Image (cartoon, helix red, strand yellow):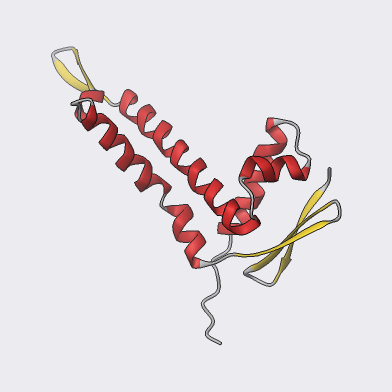
Length: 140
């Protein structure tokens, strides 16, 4: 199914598909919530590591080469990314529930998206509308 995002000024947008139309607004609350996923993901990672009696330093491998010691942080970085992605998906899902009254998977299905590529493109466009422009701070 074809969908489109229509801008009505800086902060107001419409998601239109089929015979449905959802008006939504980009707000500082949504922006703050969406930007919090990195912090939330890392905090969850630290808590989970602590439950297992580990620290972030346990994910770093020290390697010796030519008499020098190097710190390989690739495990730590991959672990952080995994937790950040999980947190981002959770926050994005919450924002969709608040904005459209349905979770992201239900929204994507309702829009008629059938492939992962379509869903990723849709999610990127939606996130751009929610975050891409700084919400106005005009006082009424």
